[in-house]
Image (spheres, rainbow, N blue to C red):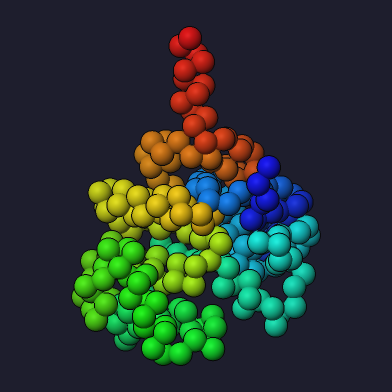
Length: 238
Ligand SMILES: Nc1ncnc2c1ncn2[C@@H]1O[C@H](COP(=O)(O)OP(=O)(O)OP(=O)(O)O)[C@@H](O)[C@H]1O
Ligand SMILES: [Mg+2]
């Protein structure tokens, strides 16, 4: 069996008296795209934030690429974050930087040893990989929502992380652009990065037939394997 890249062992996370995650166990394998679904307030964003160590669990263990995110020293957090790319619903690009500068900036915050020249070269490669090689000098406001989200993906991927977490990455996109974004995220998984996507988009989740984790009130109530719906439909008809 492949080694898990992300592993949660009995993870509970409380905000004051409120349990946002309750005893979650899960393991994500390398190079797979998994959906994280559940009603608003179920704990999806909380689960994602534990992976890049934006927050720590109240109880339990979170392992990311062999590193203990639950217990590591603050001085090692940068090392963990280089292995986890993040994409948000609202892109979070810096408005005063061009597309290529946004991507290069992502690389240099993660690793101060990277020179400006190298950062720009790698940023251009990353922009080309998301189909925006010719828009590097555009500012975010000069790009469409879908293009801005591609820049955000380039920024998340430029350091070649082992894991990409995406919180509602298609939430602000129309359906066609959302599908293009999903194609891109699937390509990223096919090249070996573990991708975890929190989403409310039922159409995308149903059609793509990937593994689906369902959270309700902080509990992982369902873990449906990839192709699960299709296989069950086939069994029912045979
Ligand atoms: N910083 C915080 N302080 C207090 N409570 C919080 C905080 N962040 C989240 N919560 C609570 O934790 C629970 C889980 O929130 P979370 O944001 O993880 O849900 P979600 O599944 O991402 O919801 P949505 O689909 O609306 O984005 C909710 O009850 C929320 O109110
Ligand atoms: Mg959320």
